[in-house]
Length: 414
Image (cartoon, rainbow, N blue to C red):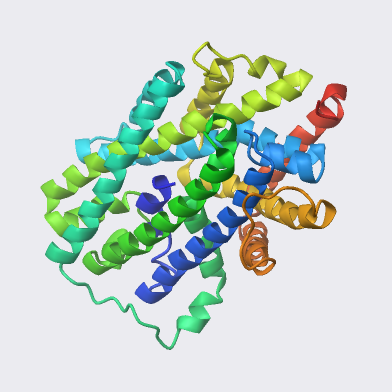
């Protein structure tokens, strides 16, 4: 989860939400949304354990067409776009550290190297992922503590003010929540690799809940430190907010060092999505004749064809698109299908009350309703404020729907 969003999105928020309290509240609401979603996914994954994420869960609970569309989104851009975004952010940070503008080249080199690592097999990729994630968490902890000790306090208000209510109910708050929820994306990632997890009924819910809880605390704390140490005008409109905050805390040289460490941390984000994305494509290939060519795996368990297809899509996005356009475009589809999956939990409760559920959502039905209300609110504002990106997202889904209905073997799953 921890990666691109928390190191890039604050610059898009401080312009319209000039309040430390409102921004911290924004990140806390994002954490609540992610946590309620994780609780719902945990019940579904424990009751219906199979890799594939929304592709499997929606296809099993609502309709094969919805499952296919979720898988289609994941296979085409659902993971490729976040990988491209992480690589673009890495390129921006690397350019700041190295003092040149070859950000696209750095992004392409990063995704190429990570893809090669994961072609080596599951065990090698897992060791790499664990090591990179531990490094990333250590980096955030160091920046957080150093900011509190060495940072110079800025005139930012972390308490509610007279404009708090107006800011929280504004369209700017809803649009900023899109960036925040992108930063939290990955809260459901364990459901994509259920088939590779030992004792999934126990470990998938633990992974979802513990991971989301830890990340919520990290995100609220880290953004508070960014605001506490760095003038808002310096952050406004910039992607590389971590390096800017590092300069405010440690000086120019220290800021470059922090930027270099963030580059290494972003490699962990690229690696996580490079690992998970092809597993969804391979699962679809196992079920659907038209996509059977994505199913082959190496003796080490790596879906190499799906991995290479994802790599081609990622490199295309890096070369042809901008950071903000890719983010909004992909968040439309991700929000839509996560909302449908949470709604599917409620449908399954009614339709199959006797189904064995090793984990049950607490405070049901309040928990899924909180997630659905926030998600629908976000979708409305995405469509209203970002119509071009919304249309592009719908066009991607329309292409998948045509493929589903014009492929006879895709209409039902074995």
